Amino acid sequence: GEGLPKPEQTRVMVVANQKGGVGKTTSTVNLAASLALHGARVLVIDLDPQGNASTALGIDHHAEVPSIYDVLIDSKPLSDVVQPVRDVEGLFCAPATIDLAGAEIELVSLVARESRLQRAIQAYEQPLDYVLIDCPPSLGLLTVNAMVAGQEVLIPIQCEYYALEGLGQLLRNVELVRGHLNPELHVSTILLTMYDGRTRLASQVAEEVRSHFAKEVLKTSIPRSVRISEAPSYGQTVLTYDPSSSGSLSYLEAAREIALRGAGVFYDAQHAHAVD
Ligand code: ADP
Ligand code: MG
Image (cartoon, rainbow, N blue to C red):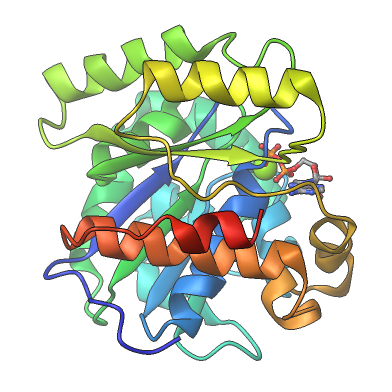
């Protein structure tokens, strides 16, 4: 994984979809690990009180651990809570603890309540190529903080019935944040997850998504894979849990596509199909 272009400035990508179970956390941690394996420096910010991204990266996040809650609510510097991820050089995580469940309400009465994460990232002094923010399954103040902090929204879509339900509301929220709080924000990337090309429904949904979002949908889709779903219980991404699995190869390829697109380099789709 050498030779991928590095972004000129840190790309802050908000992984959002208010539906649960569509592959936000799985895509956040596996894309982040893939980008790091491709040579980038990557920070995952776990913004879901469930702390699933922290768990999947093998990061301690019991209640006493300094976490993104302290950053958002008590203005603790981000560098005080960031931990390196074992086994993947260049990959870091700001964990979420259960405290974060209350942050949605605590934020309401704080000054600059929508831009606290943005400020924390801007004050972070370590060089980073990518920040990936794993959002909770809602469009509340935590997700708004992520959208104010980022330039790009990455939407994972599970290829099943009702896949597009709620997407309109998500896109309207992106427009609202763009119009009022962050003119840079845009949906740059849509990733089809848990894709099973053998079922007619999955290929119909994929076709429909591609027809609506021709530019945004990655050519690489992520197959349904047992290895992907097993990895988190070992505190690992699929990239270290089973490096040669189809799930691992598809995330590496999706990350390559993201890096190349960001640099404006044409992406050769033949590779994408090889790992479907
Ligand atoms: P979200 O963060 O959107 O709620 P998750 O990433 O936690 O979604 O994924 C929901 C469930 O689906 C998890 O149990 C996860 O392990 C599983 N999963 C995600 N992607 C895949 C995949 N490509 N193949 C198999 N299982 C997957
Ligand atoms: Mg999640």
